[in-house]
Length: 162
Ligand SMILES: [Zn+2]
Image (cartoon, rainbow, N blue to C red):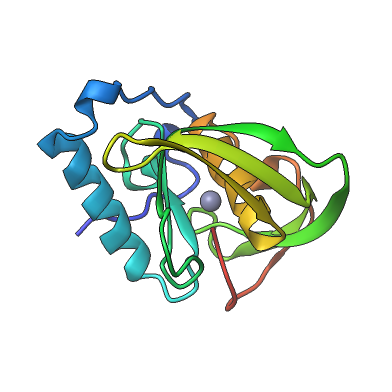
């Protein structure tokens, strides 16, 4: 079982490596994706997880099926290609910064381009929580944590964390 690393771990500050398209079907990448889903499932308040959060410095994040009932749940080499100019201050937490919680200023809509677990390219647009997830998770792949730019940081327990 993979452990979710906490904020002192340098892997969270690295710029994650792109996955070569030809490597997407490989056992290594498919195993990482399976481990990410398994690790996320252990967190009752978890909504999404980036690969560095279980120690892999590669550009993948997954979303909980509790948030998106249908696919896509796996985003490989994700790129935010569109963000709304409109932003809002949103409550935010992170599975790697327990038990802290704060407010972040995020675009309320965002569109991501990525590969799925079969190597198929897709784009997906989301609003509200989904847009927040996209921005939070792509930040993870660039070594950025929400606490770097959040205000009103405080210890807090339940609810959703990314
Ligand atoms: Zn996080």
